[in-house]
Length: 96
Image (cartoon, rainbow, N blue to C red; front, side):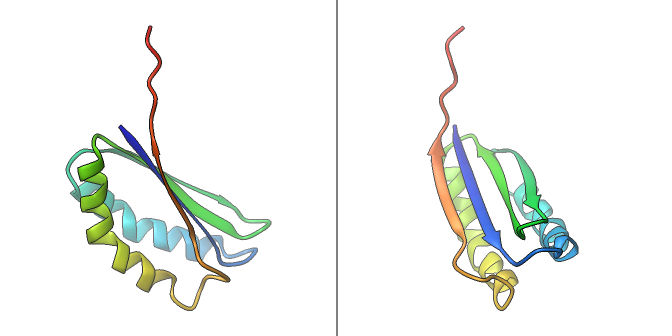
């Protein structure tokens, strides 16, 4: 399983903008097979917002990135104060 982390800064007090971006991308996550779920997050005081999603496979994550990457870039254009932080992590699931 893989985790995909995206964090961007658009400035303090812009929660409504961040929520509109989340609302736009939630159906995109849901439309890609093998997405285990997404959580949107934010710190309104400093203006950082983003998401963490879980993927069944690296291939599923790459399919999402190909589909949504250009859309996310377009949605953030002119809003962000710098490049977003984007990271992929392999998820370790402890043995019982």
